[in-house]
Image 1 (cartoon, helix red, strand yellow):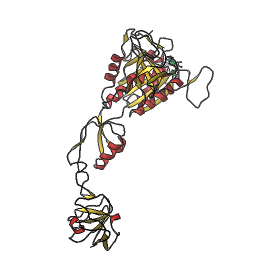
Image 2 (image 1 turned 180 degrees about the vertical axis):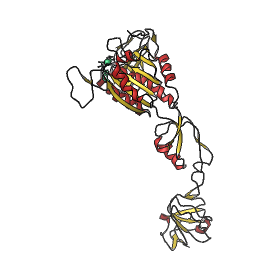
Image 3 (image 1 turned 90 degrees about the horizontal axis):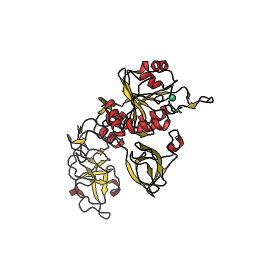
Image 4 (image 1 turned 90 degrees about the vertical axis):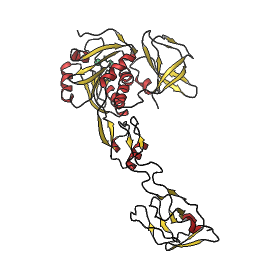
Amino acid sequence: MPNTTTRLRSVDSYRATVSALVGDLPIEHLPVPDCLGLVLAEDVTAPIALPPFDNSAMDGYAVRSVDVVGASEENPVKLPVPEDIPAGRTDVVPLLPGTAHRIMTGAPLPPGADSIVQVELTDSGVEQVRVFAAVPIGTHLRRTGEDVREGATVLTAGTVLGPPQLGFLAALGIPRLPVRRRPRVLILSTGTELVEPGKPLAHGQIYESNSVHIAAAVQEIGGVAHVLRSVPDDTDALYETLEPHLKEHDLLITTGGVSAGAYEVVKDALTGEGVEFVRVAVQPGGPQGFGTYRGLPVLTLPGNPVSAALSFELFVRPALLAALGNPQIDRRRQRATASSSMKSPAGRRQYRRGYYDAGTVQAVPVGGPGSHLLAAFAQSNCLIEIPEDVTEVPEGGEVDLVMLIP
Ligand code: AMP
Ligand code: MG
């Protein structure tokens, strides 16, 4: 029989154990479009100013403000138009006094001009233009460096890269960014009873779902999931399935086969192979294992689908976010009142699936504490956290929620 450490670990100490196991991911330079959801590993300074040159904010005419003083509908000012400056024109065409260049939005301001008359305030003339209004100096100009000065620190290490950040860095002409590499997570479910969705079920079999949940959760935080689906409860099958994949990954996550019964394939296969099996003071998700199997960090999660999901949520998700350099590793929390009473075992931190109603600030337990209740989990938007020293939450009692939605 494999040895099991029976001492209960606290949730917080096991979180620290898992974080230390996962560690920091190495920094690499990725193309900007591939960095969505990743975290800047170094500060970024602007290689150019934005805008890079003075340019027009409108389609219209580049003029000297003094040349259109007094212009009105009744007394338009007539100016010859020697040049047309579309966006992208790169030669320099100075503006002589008493003339106007036709100019488009984003085109460079010609030297000598100090204002733009928008096309709506003119007769749109091509050879000659009639201007119907005076414009103060600086009208409809975008000045060099108005958005960003060259050399300024524009984003700092730890910034999470969303669409606005990526678009901005592309506008600065930056092709690649220093980020921590996406964690490459190998996922293996275990259980002779498991069948891949799409295939027929015999009596006694169930569809394999943990690998789908875990892979999605890995991808959601920016990781790359490599799913090996499932192996039967046979240690040789487990060794053989893992063998070709031990090198290319940062973490192995297994589910199932770590409890106290017989046929505990993960425990049987990995005990004495660098993996320690422990019990954590949490419900669900008590039986856990961690270690390094032939050089690959491994976390063995329990098999019950809600237990596996919660184990990922509580231990793996924060560790992977920290490994990516994300400063925000915890979910948003919320106080609420319980819509009904709940019991919880002494000495365990219990997480119940719940629905938080922002209108009434109530938390409604969804389903019971059973760790096979998948529909209830899928209908929840939060976890109701019941501390170790609380055995009963009364109806209307205050509870802390871990929000599963932004
Ligand atoms: P185990 O931890 O292997 O004893 O599994 C506990 C319970 O979770 C059993 O009812 C299993 O059938 C179920 N289970 C284990 N792994 C999976 C999986 N990958 N997908 C769905 N259910 C699973
Ligand atoms: Mg099993």
